[in-house]
Amino acid sequence: MRMLLVDDSVTMRRIQKTQINGLGITDIIEAGDGQEALGKLKSNMPIDMVLLDWNMPVMDGMAFLKTVRADEAFKDVKVIMCTSESEKSKVVEALKSGANNYIVKPFTPEALKEKIGM
Amino acid sequence: MNVAYINPFINATAACFKNMVFVEAKQGTPQIKKEPYPRYDISGIIGLSGGAQGSISLCFPMQSALDIVSKMIGAPITEPGTDLADAVGEIANIIAGFAKRDLVGLNLSISLPNVIISSHVLSGMSGVGTIIVPFTCPLGPFAMEVSLKTAS
Image 1 (cartoon, each protein chain N blue to C red):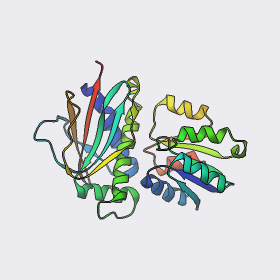
Image 2 (tube, chains in turn brown, blue):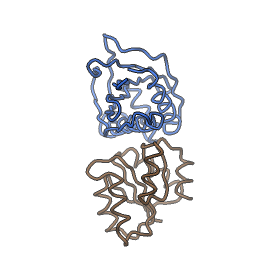
Image 3 (tube, helix red, strand yellow):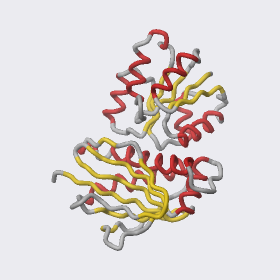
Image 4 (tube, rainbow over the protein chains, first blue to last red):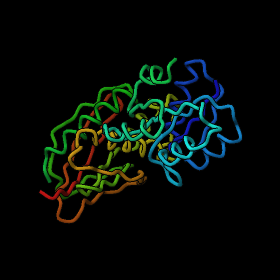
């Protein structure tokens, strides 16, 4: 499995990468905002899953999600929102916009594992 | 400022430390901020807007911040720098975001984090009281400052 981690916080990417490595996934690409993520998605396909923050500079996670879901080339890419946005309305908005799952920070390693479906 | 708005931030701090730092953060008695203002070495600040305006800050002595962030990322951080600033900002971001879930009526939006490194005091919004909540955890003390102006 190849995974794209998108978060403007280097700390969060580091934590997520460690946890995901622990699940046996080592093919991991990182991006610090939605725009950088779009470029890395296009140039590193096939990517199976994107772990996506919401609040980021340049291009936020929702804009990235809508762009990806509008492109047939990425129809099989699973997107899991991994964000501090915790209200139900935000969860609904993300799922309606095409996110496959949603995890709220702060999350436990077990919760991340469950959401990824490992 | 309505003190009822403090509890979601306290609960979010406890959850953040339990799930991401793997230690228990125990709150002390919340206080109204008065002069002389406490000094901190590093603070992560999130602006709040929407149905209320203000900020939430997570404020640390340097050694507490270094030890908490080292535990959080699973690697030693021994001096202030970009790694420490990023992590402190992310802690503040997580706490603000998690607290929003219990403040739905305020329809809050949160800013990207700002981080101050070096000895400093924080001043709250003019005319709005700031609540300071002291915390202790096995990795050292820290504090949360919340300043929130609501219509009522």
